[in-house]
Length: 225
Image 1 (tube, rainbow, N blue to C red):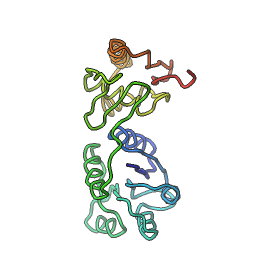
Image 2 (cartoon, rainbow, N blue to C red; image 1 turned 135 degrees about the horizontal axis):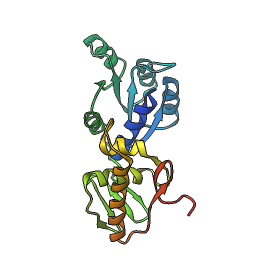
Image 3 (spheres, helix red, strand yellow; image 1 turned 180 degrees about the vertical axis):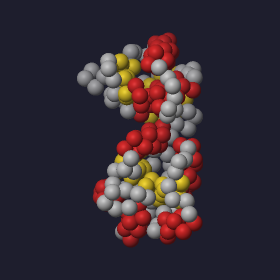
Image 4 (cartoon, rainbow, N blue to C red; image 1 turned 90 degrees about the horizontal axis):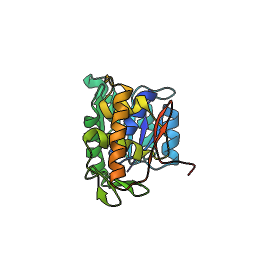
């Protein structure tokens, strides 16, 4: 299921993208209203996560224009406005649902699942790299069809790398995803977690897939191999 996140706060957009990809969505991002409309005119999206306040065109304007062009995907409006008149305005513009900031990732995912049921489409359930495979439905990771016995944080770390194979994931971003935003976690704790995951991959017979990119973070696989 393909989702467009239209959000001008780049850090929030990145975090939303990672949470949605981890839940099995194919995700694109736009940082202003005009770009959101252009991407919806170019690609077919099942769901649109739309921030109310954006440069160039507001979320209200984007929703109204897209519905006028017969956009049939579900629209979830993100807003800091919580008065009844604002929420009614958002729904009248063409949004199917709204979520008031701040919110938890689980609440966002629940709203999107509800919208996706209305769309009657299926999720992408498997993400793989070489013989390493993430099953979104069962929340398990296996190598060569043999499940790995991972803790929750080990799973979060490895699934993050699996989502973006051969791309460097920075240390700060990994810590925010695995331990949560604002967590007081040292680099040593992250390095210890990586050692444990590498040990389990090695025991499963996997090659050395997790690469250290000194000064930046970690990457799954080697794009130059």
